[in-house]
Image 1 (cartoon, rainbow, N blue to C red):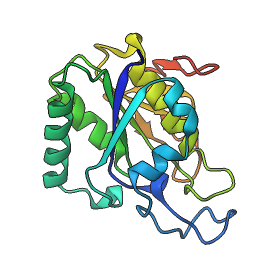
Image 2 (cartoon, rainbow, N blue to C red):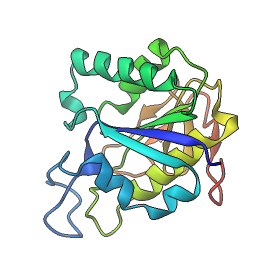
Image 3 (spheres, rainbow, N blue to C red):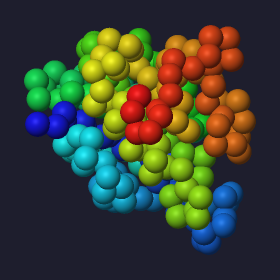
Image 4 (cartoon, rainbow, N blue to C red):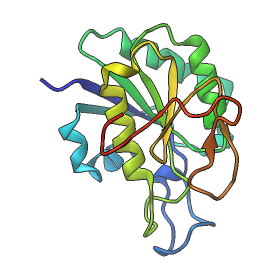
Length: 191
């Protein structure tokens, strides 16, 4: 049996539509729902049994304390289910590090919680959201993620929520941990 990973959608660039495949700015964020994001990555079902739900669908700069609390409560509730291995949260990158750190403080489970997002809209010719989502699910399904706290997985890199920071507003390799470095990598589909 495959591990079960529950994906929670919150919006952001990973769920954005642009006017043209080469348009990387000026797009409409938070327009694609979580089910459509999951269905866009059929390979995801090779790593886990996937369920998903839309918690909110806003720009991450619009996340309020109320949404944070709703998200944290939902994560804790989902992780109490014995058949759930881990949770993945799709998120906008503006406040991804803040949400990750908050969840690291309030999630009461040893099960993996992985945040991921994208720097390019879903409709861009070079969208990295699909591979980021796939890698986040692979990481959430992996036993090595258990007990590691909340993790951030983008651009094949694994970061701890307490150390990660967004270093650039345009580059796909923006999430880094300058002081302590990455916790790990996704290499050939394996964390």
